[in-house]
Length: 412
Ligand SMILES: Cc1cc2nc3c(=O)[nH]c(=O)nc-3n(C[C@H](O)[C@H](O)[C@H](O)COP(=O)(O)OP(=O)(O)OC[C@H]3O[C@@H](n4cnc5c(N)ncnc54)[C@H](O)[C@@H]3O)c2cc1C
Image 1: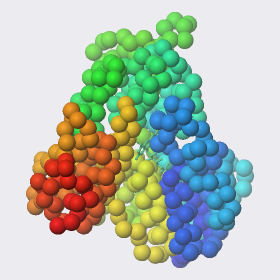
Image 2: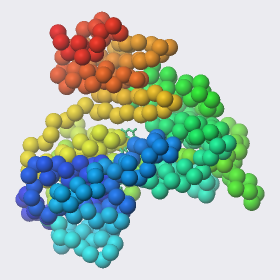
Image 3: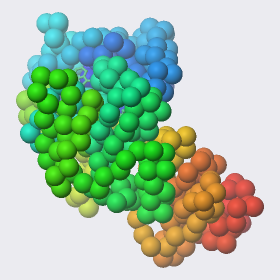
Image 4: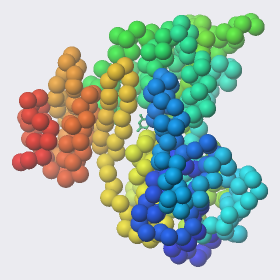
């Protein structure tokens, strides 16, 4: 591992076994890499994060059920999984990665897929006991134990994770208040129409929604009870507070190794960092685009794609085709998906908010499909994804006609 002599690496150390790291390792093997692969992760075993705010939080699945790959996969594919181990230092000049057990495996190249941390609540009392974040399985276990029937839960942040936690807390029998200043949140991601529908679902389901921010969290005397004070001065008693206000990427390993960082590890479109033998992907990476802007996409498919792309680049092979952005969310019994870019004024609605499913399609000036978001219509999103990829301009009347199967959008 050195900055000046890079060739196809034999020994690769991947730090972080979330979806980005595991996808990278799978891609390395499927592309024929036969060298040594070490996958290091501080957790018990590699698991998937999206269920943590959904089935896992609801007690419908356990850690075993959310494995990213079967336990035997690592042996079967000759991947040396070092679980419950942390990388504590990269030593680029020595070509090693130091682990917390004192070992320092040799690495011709390193891939950092270390994810991020939940952003803490930046107000007085934001770190009191009883104030939870949700990023890891340990967080989810703690939160699950606190979300008992009748508990007063205040959820701060109505984005993807906050909204899902609020819905799960309600389903678990809690009395839920959701604090979110933006009305509606997620409009950039799913478009205004669906964002409004989703946000209004909270109130319809029985959640109290406050368009406000949090000024402070205090503990009431010696009792195990919290009080959340909003910026407008309301004091909300709470047994549990859950903070879903975004992601932060600790500098740690990358900064110490002298890699270029700026709220994430900066990488080029091959996921190469400022050290050509060190790559980064997933939530931890910010990709420098051709126009010089920096972009981090904090969702599952982007992390999977980033891991695969980094693996291809590590081997000096052609990169996988870039799929349009895609993410999903589940709350209050509905399934939401969005693909592509939902920013823009040219909308076609298929269905209505009063009778789901509803799909909103976002067209470019020249009629090409740029993006689509849907509530309870995965087929519409699958067809939209193919239309976006093909770059063809669909017939808008066909898109809006609910009697036409989405797959027929593709036949013209
Ligand atoms: C509760 C929750 C719900 C979500 N729901 C959705 C959803 O519905 N749809 C969607 O598209 N996205 C969702 N996401 C986002 C998605 O899960 C993330 O974008 C994705 O997990 C990022 O993958 P990653 O591999 O980059 O990072 P991570 O999954 O965070 O994995 C990073 C791994 O690196 C390990 N690690 C970090 N530092 C070290 C070190 N020094 N040594 C060893 N190991 C280390 C960590 O333990 C962790 O296992 C959700 C996220 C959360 C937290």
